Image (cartoon, rainbow, N blue to C red; front, side, top):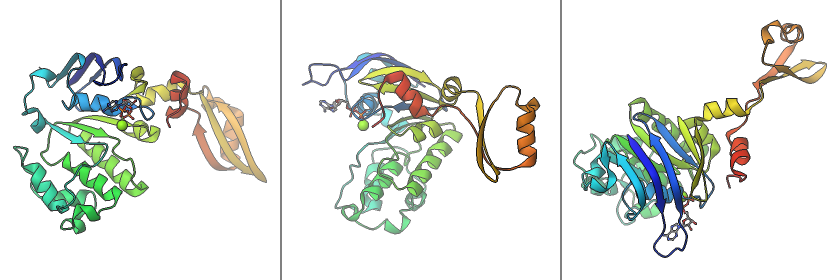
Length: 283
Ligand code: ADP
Ligand code: MG
């Protein structure tokens, strides 16, 4: 659905490139993530992909067409969640949605239902200037969904949201995927990347250091061990090799005899792997 080849980008006033020769591909119906610390070039890449920044080097194809050859019809096919909300503050939430929907051919069946998806139905007629940052973010998010496009770009979709709203936004993104939509998401939150992405690119200083599926990465980089915590007068912790576990007498005795408090396989966290691969942390 999206193919990016040898993409580089330098901001007009900067001496050095912000995006450096990156390559990736996003298949239809998949969620692809850019994980990286602040300043890595995630938003810049998103802005290039949605045609907000031009004069890039390299080649980008979206839905079978070179990005350069897409005219404004492009925006009927993509939904964009910007990093920072950009609403008309003097207008209400509903008026904002109605205004922005005039840009698109397809109109939503129900604006109130859309607002309800992110818990803003009661706030439909309030001016956005009275919204909290989180409410603005949620309104921003549903603007991407209004015209039911096939492709979505979400720049840090859960940033600044409380855990309940962040959970809801992630569920909506997973629902979009279940409907076969193609999704590009940027984040500096490894839990979001882990949970949402079929494949994730580690981005540092404008360079992709690795692309893989979070699941495979964690298995490849973890230890094949099981950590068991059980009660025997006091809490005991033992580790077992995952291989041959079913025949491990000690393991079988423990799970038969004692109260198990927890059992965890010791796969690496995405954050551990990010640090190992890039030498940087995600802040
Ligand atoms: P991220 O989204 O990963 O935090 P950005 O893409 O926003 O990173 O920024 C990457 C780099 O590009 C940063 O060093 C930032 O200062 C620089 N940058 C971003 N926007 C501009 C701009 N409009 N002009 C010049 N440099 C910019
Ligand atoms: Mg950003």
